[in-house]
Amino acid sequence: MLYVWIEVGGLGGWFPRRGLHPPTIFVPALTAVDRTSRPVLGLRQGMDMKKRYILLIILAGLIAYSGLIEPYWIAQKTYRLTIQGLGPETVRIVHIADIHATRNGFREAKAREMIKRIDPDYIFFTGDLIKSSSRLTPGLDFLTGLKARHGTYMVLGNADRLLVRSIQRGRLSKDSLDYHILINESVDCGNFTLVGLDDPVSDREDVGKAFAGIDEFKPVFVLTHFHPDSLLEDLETYNVDMVFSGHTHGGQFGLPVVVKLVPYAARSDYIAGLYHYDGFLLSVTRGLGTNIFPLRFLCRPEIVVFELRGE
Image (cartoon, rainbow, N blue to C red; front, side, top):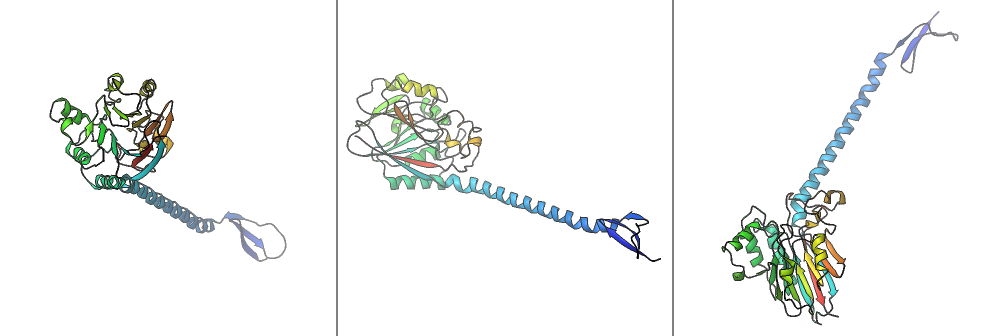
């Protein structure tokens, strides 16, 4: 009788050519398994490598964008608001902060150019002109290059320690500068009173001293580098119309999960934007620079413009 070799499902055996008799022997068809498995395994490995390359390319692109593009892509945001008692004429204010200047580069030049086009009546700078370990010159040059019809006013931030020491030791006279540094004091700006607080992050603010003798019958604007809840509660007892603040950088990353990991943003629930606090408005700018991480993602640096007028 003749027998025929037949393989089914990777198993093989000798079958009679005629009849329906069962096979006499079955042995694993190893060669068939090897031939079919190797190409499938190689295909999977190739797909995994392609996915890794794609992920690496995406990650490299995000890092490049976050470090080389967005930190220098300055946004401009404009608010038009009514402030009771301010008067009929529109007052245009530019609010900036946290440039952390280490040199006069592209970002600084772009900010000056944008502010020049805005043509503001006032510029309010709410702290962190320099990095903690940087030289004073780049930051001071940046402020000197800013022009506003009625002046530039600034308060000091926690990174401005070198500037603070220079003023305290007489190396720098704040009265001889082209801009005004307010340290727990107020100034009459005609149709409003401007109060400047020293840095709350470093516990240098003195609210009572800053508000001493102010004219509360005029609108009162407050400059502060930061806005802890304790300070906001203190300001409720005064006739304050608007508070300008910074320090948070907007978190530098527009992802809520990441923002809470950024130390200077996690200190407050007011990260960036315009808020209606009890009795007054609170403006928190995302700032112009970066700190700790030289990156921004979905959180562009910004120049905030306020066009204010009375009722």
